[in-house]
Image 1 (cartoon, rainbow, N blue to C red):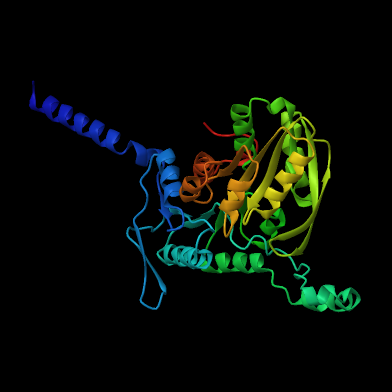
Image 2: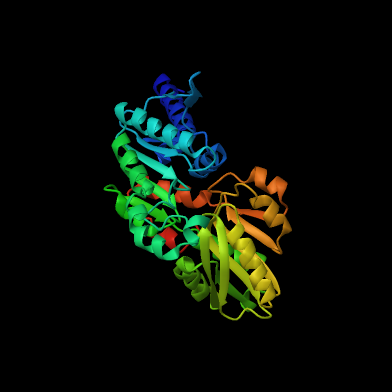
Length: 367
C-alpha cells in the first residue's frame, strides 16, 4: 500500500474515533447542566435523558453558614441550565440557586436558565386575609373593621423571589405546576410553566383499573380548573370540596359538591404540605360512598405530621411527582408512589436549547 494511502486510512480511522467519542457533544453542543444540592437525583436523570454529563460544581458552607459556590468548568459562551427545586431547606436552596446563577452570568455564560421544578414561596402570591386568632373571633365586627389594615401589610413573596432571580442574572425560568399561574406575570423574562397533567393521565390509565368509573375531585375551589381539564380528557365527571380555614394549615369545615357514591374518587391538587386538607377530603369522600380514594399531587412537600396522617387515612395510594425528593417519604409510608417527570424537564431543556416550541409538552408525555 502506498504511503499516501496509509496516511489517509489512518486519518480516516482517527476521524471516525473522534466522531464516535464526541457523538453526544455534537448532538447537544454549547450546553451545560448544573445541579444544586436540593435534588441531585432529578438533575442526574435529566442529563442521562439528554445524553450529556452533569457540570462540575462545588457547593459548601463557611463556618458562619454562608453559602459558597464554585463552578468547576468553563461556561463562557455556553447555554447554562441550573436545576434546583424549592424544597427542603428552602431559604438555603434559594440562596444557593441565586449564587449559582450569578456565578455563571459573570463567567460570561451566553444564557442562564433556572430549572425550578417546585417554585419556592409560590403560595405567597397575593395579599390575602391573615390568619384569625381566637381573640379576634370573639369580636367579629371589630375584626372586619380592621381587617384591611392587616391585609395591606402582607408580603407578596413570590414576586420578591421573581425579582431576585431576574437580578441574579436568570434569562429564562422552567418550572412545573405553579400554585398560581399568574406568578408567570411577576417576571420580565420568559417563564415556561410545564404541567404534570399528561403524566398524571398516563398514570391513571395504567394503574387504576376502574378509571372509567372514576370521578376527579378537587379538594378546594381553586383547583376546579385543573380537575375539569383532567376529567374532560378522561371523559369522566368531576366534583369539588369547598373548605373554610380558621387559620393556616387547619381546615374548619368541608362541603362536598358532586356525587361520588359507588365510584373511585381521585383527588387532584398541585401540592400537599401537612396533608390536613387531603386527609379530611378523603374522609369526606368515603362517608359520601366512594369505593376507593386516590390522591394525585404534583408537589409532595409532606412536612410536619403529613406522613402520619397519610398512614392513618383511607387512601389506596398517594401519588406524587419527583419535583421534590421522595425517597425518604416512600420509605416511611408505603402508600406514597412516585411519577418520574424528569423526561418532561429534559425535553423542555432540549427544546429550549434548540430554539423549538415547548407547547407540545403541555398535553403530551415525551418518550
